[in-house]
Amino acid sequence: MTSAGRRRGLVRPYVITDGRAHPTRNTLDLVTLVIAARGETGGLSPEKRRVMELCRGGALSLAEVAGHLRIPVSVTKVLLSDLVDSGHIVTRSPIPSAELPEPAILQEVLDGLRARL
Image (cartoon, rainbow, N blue to C red; front, side):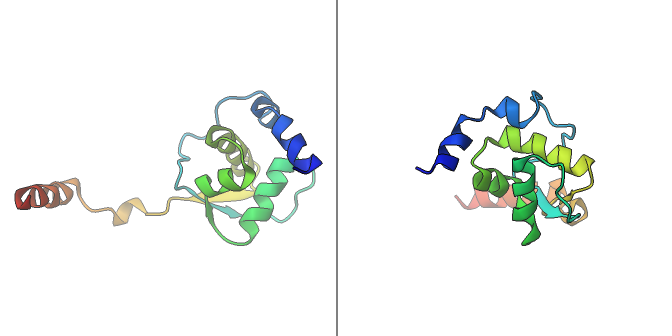
């Protein structure tokens, strides 16, 4: 293991989030897409700079960002909320709500599948 890898493992989640346990936005979930919006990273923590580097290549889901950073999803949500608040990233739902089928249609499909079993 490299010294950088050892150091990363020693950083506690509350240090990464400046002691906060909850994101400022409750709309983030595992499949929320993250896209870099601004180029400058001056003044950002190393973890936030890494998020920016990851998202410059294209949209990534919150789960992918957490995996690349090797930090818990809850910590990633706090970091992403901060970056949205500062205008560094934008987030998108992978499926716009206007494109979701009506619940009644989904129920009919489910009933039809159950009837075939």
